[in-house]
Length: 500
Image (cartoon, rainbow, N blue to C red; front, top):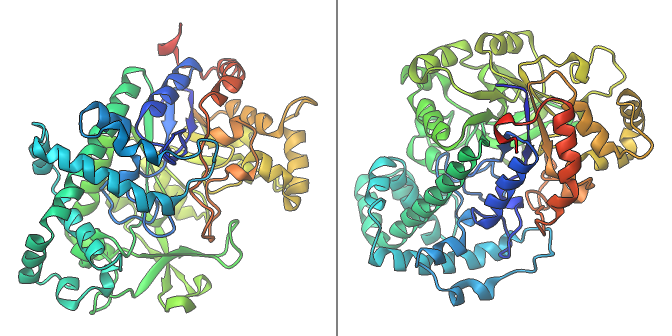
């Protein structure tokens, strides 16, 4: 990894006339903007389908793609839609908040038209996609069943299908054939369009940093089909759930609700499920950020007690550690992984990271505690790292500085960064990570645009207003083009391959 920089912008935050960012023209325009400003990387959030709460970290599948990102204009160009099929669903482009309920109600209607038209004359690559995608059959059946049972969790399905009795599975496959095919074709549309976006980025010397959660959701095809991968009880119900102890984000700790892994089983099977997942992900992205990397060393396991579950009652349980990554290297060779190492630290975690030699992360917002030995102060960054002002879980830089609880922290930040009188705190902090020793600096689009917390992506331990912010007009890129070029060039992060 050479000294470089990039921008974190989720696909859903791209400008669009249809309520959410897609793999359409705006994705290509953003790549062009990255090229024009000397960037080298585009970091995104997980691309998997979202469930209740709209979080990409709580998905129905570890491998499927989110059909909300399928671009209608591209489907029309290929002859699967007419303009009148979807133009009436256009949204107010000035609305910077995604309405997921509206998307849930309207997008499947449009996609079904496209799927039906496609199935009249499938293109030659469709059968190859089905043959290659071993996960697709179970995923498509799972989604068709969810719709048949009014969106209920698989845990609440009739017992015969919940425990996957073979005869019952076959009955439902026949009964739900049309819906199963719908989900298969949607996945074909998704991956075809994404591959076109990625190919365009790579041809322009832009690399994609993808993101996968450590855990999968309980209500997912993965837990339904391979329950032995997880710590469930004899009835295949939750026994323990994942989360974190009290930390920066929550004084009560965090309850994520995901089932934790049965690492003994993973080890006995040579970690094959994990290696298949990583191999698949590394075909989609050039680099892969693994969220909550520390869970490989030790994970916070919380006894499941329904709504009474308490993160403070959890305990650290040893994870697979080096054994996992030693096997990974033998299976896949060196992997371009970024270790999200934030949160509770330990000597064991530090040793594991050093042994893997994966780049780690620093977050500038965490730096100003008043302690000289704070690892997040830029002068202390090790080169093999990725520097952020904040991640998708943080406030924006301006929102952080405006928060009364951060008053003294923001004063320290202004002093440390030698913020000029006409310089915003957002750009002073962007400059702080650009000047750091980290090989890679990733700016959030909200901080480049100097936006406050209306542009925050996620507030951990909350529901309702997360994963919604989006850019309303691509013309805003013009306002930051010159200062971003200057910042990138000044700190020797300019992508030499894209020099004019």
